[in-house]
Image (cartoon, rainbow, N blue to C red; front, side):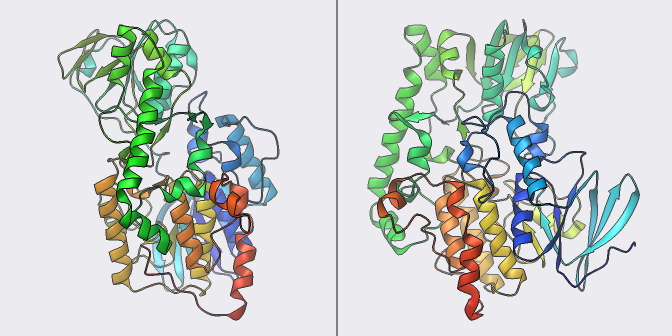
Length: 512
């Protein structure tokens, strides 16, 4: 063990330097912790450093930045992956974050005073001691889901995942089959059709609802990012007595509201093309299930030309599963055969994994098929002095990480008292069961807050005795104006003012 031993200042190791790790580190520094970020690769950025070309943020720029550090340059409305990487580098420099690149956390050992981390770097193996650990290794940056299919070794073409697409030239003059219906899959189909593929075939087991850029003539954020839209959203927990009453007494009205929105989405899809053949193709990509179940972590913003390309026949949809490869292409479970040269398997990510954790903790965290179950999406009751950042993925992701980290900082500073283990476990079980009943499966379903961001943020802020109503006293703006990251810029200052009386805070048991 080297000289990385405990100091008088409480030290936190942050594992991962994606947007979540960086945002968490900024808040931890503000709240008085000494922070070291460990990144196993040679660059910061997490999933953005691995992103395929032409990828764009699904949110708009005002929703995706550290709350008190706006974009230092003018990005696109939906920033590109390159612009996001530039922003993250600027944030690390601005906040003087201590980042250790090519430092992989290999193991963790619990000590009486915190955690001993084994770090592998170009200099060799060292052990560093920390009082707390913030796990921010992401749930989209590890290996892609890459099952093996019968006959794959006989296929004369090329099989890749979207992670291997480094240039759009890969599609040129190719007959491309894309398998899957998540964000990456529809992006790949759209990119291929727009980059001179000879033909694009889109194979999927289940069509998913995608969010159009405009809903009833308004940019989607004007409806989904205000308090009115979020109050109408069904959730495992509602932070106010009014919301709880409304969802209990007016469930029929709320369901009718979402049926109306679903109808608007369907009309939008079918208006992408005219003619009998175009309509037949578009009907194939209209989901058969309710919209609400697809409002999950992996909910996808519609690529701008996807439905138009389906209508034109540039993208041919196949509602079936891939059964096997044949020498010239794919054999589907419905009996259809697709001749193709390039297959893009875009089947999502694996369940979040924690290879650096002790074996018994790793087994506990990785035991559920839909991801790690956490209290408030932040801690596990049986793992002391460890927090999780970014496992509360939502439409207002950066503020969720910041407020979640403030919640953890209050806990670690002794200013927030946890409920009993039984209460926390009950809360975790309630959230797990609700998600499984109301949200379609994905390997990271447990980590998804998604469109319930307002409920989630309100609950955390109420735990900290901070007002969740960030636009007050302007009532109209509070209800109807879009929330932005900057609305949460002063939560730390608000918390400091609330903490002057020295009273230990307790999370509300009225909200799960």
